[in-house]
Image 1 (tube, rainbow, N blue to C red):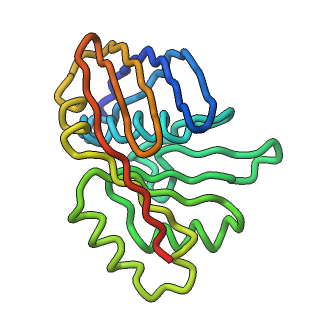
Image 2: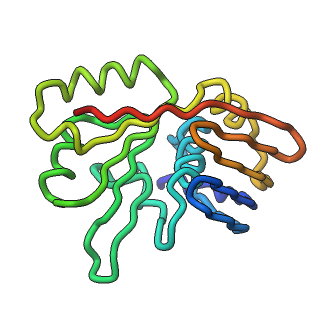
Length: 181
């Protein structure tokens, strides 16, 4: 029998200053038994970074070649595909080819993984359609170390920086954006 995912609840208060977004929302994330806390943390930070109407978590690790987060328009067409942590170049190529016009983003915290992905996509003629985001590794590690099933985060995104209060603990970290083209 397969292990069931763990239900994690995050009460998020989000202020994305540059995009003029103010939201207070409870986000329920199902953490697959093989999903690391770091991957879950990247998914939540990506949710904050790309917050928009219709942004949802994908089906999860048990369904390969699907997004960690995605947005579809009212016709069901994929408009934004976000992969966190361990994106494979071949999977990103498929998304770009099969979903013309969709924004494709990868959110990472490991510089080595970023370098591997950039090398994997080097020379690919449509690499400019993929944007890689690097979130400060120390911020991700500090948030991933918190294992409570219920957490309250106040998140402010300003320019290229996250400012967080996670249940009374203040944290911050840089966000770097890189187009592969």
